Image (cartoon, rainbow, N blue to C red; front, side, top):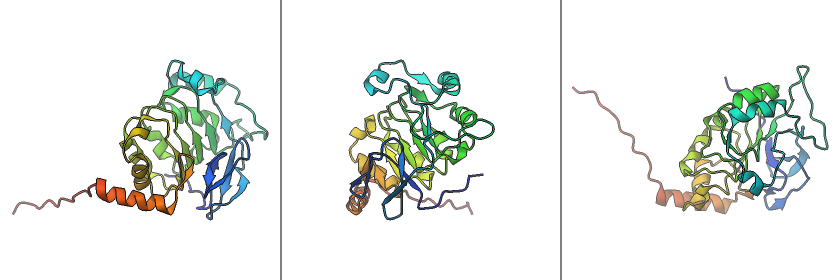
Amino acid sequence: MAPPLAPPSDMFLSAGEHVKGTLEDPGKGSVRVTGKGKAVSLLPDPGLDLRAKTTNPSTSAALEPRTLRTTAPDLISEEPRTGLRPLRHSKSGKALTQSLWLNNNVLNELRDFNHVTSQLLENPESLAWIDLSFNDLTSIDPVLTTLFNLSVLYLHGNSIQRLGEVNKLAVLPRLRSLTLHGNPIEEEKGYRQYVLCTLPRITTFDFSGVTKADRNTAEVWKRMNIKPKKVQIKQDAL
């Protein structure tokens, strides 16, 4: 059963994103954005920060790609980074947060994602903000499509090669902010238009606000480049 969805006004954007042309930069963390695109408060929690100790993308890229399965023991036993605000924990010791940083870990798959998050988070199904940037992911793992409360997903700086991978994210009803720049798919013709057509609900893409003109351009591109699927009706033989 899917977890309860967050209220429509809860759209989480990372620090540094453009919100209707306004650059928000409150420091580490995220801002909450109202339906009118106005930043009104920080996220209620600082998030679980499991970034690699080396956060320089060029340095991380030189490391050997790893699976989440081989990295899991280190992530579970390692002390998370601490921010300006302390991370709250449940009585069982698990983190009470909707935000997760897993960037710069040179991960090439997310096979044990559920295992890791269930060990570290009290309510992993309520995740709303995930940073998987600067890893070595070649596809969008289906496990991400089960997080129905997800509002922000960072996948920039990975190795995703098929633009069609974006289709998987269409099932996420609350996804509002997505990054994919720095992947091979960014070089595909119609990259931005394809994403906006496939995910019409997102309001921020690659740290740039989606405008009405963007949507109109995407619709024109769609009509010119994507043929509607023909529905074939099978009739029983008489």
